Length: 115
Image (cartoon, rainbow, N blue to C red):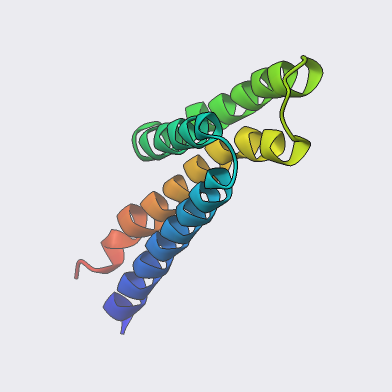
């Protein structure tokens, strides 16, 4: 019973990540090719950082990059719709948090499996 719960939780977490990535890429594909490339870069960066970096460093990276990105995109003069600016800002933190959450579910709850 416990093993089934761990496997189901892990699969749900991976499906949520995949769904979020597909939705973000679909939404970015509605705009220019440059927006799609930027969104893909932010998603790949979020996947790599969320799976390799420890929690405290991940938190500070999300805070710092969101501040720097908002300063560049929202305060500067970038000719882009505000909705895509906000989505570009939150693509990295959302992806990194979901990947870290799934890493926590799959990796940290693995001890339940061992008897």
